[in-house]
Image (cartoon, rainbow, N blue to C red; front, side, top):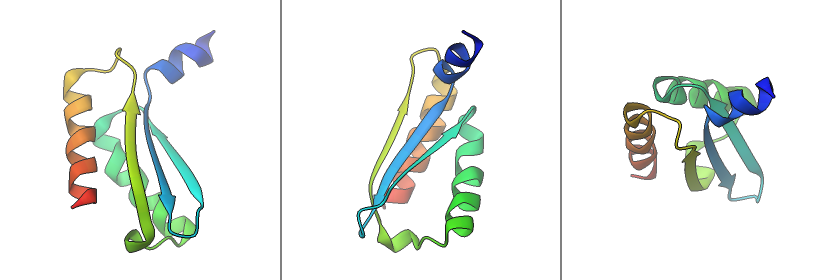
Length: 79
């Protein structure tokens, strides 16, 4: 049950590459999303230009601040 509760407080960023590969990043706070994404992209040698279909999802238990930060990062990435 603790794992399920922990997942409810997570923010998920899902994206696809042009080659059809699917990825998902999980973070606890909106502030950590960009830093975790940067590390993930560098580790997996993914070019940002090859990423499409950015989707951020979170559960209602997340604070409004974390939701706004996550959405702002997503909009900046799409730009």
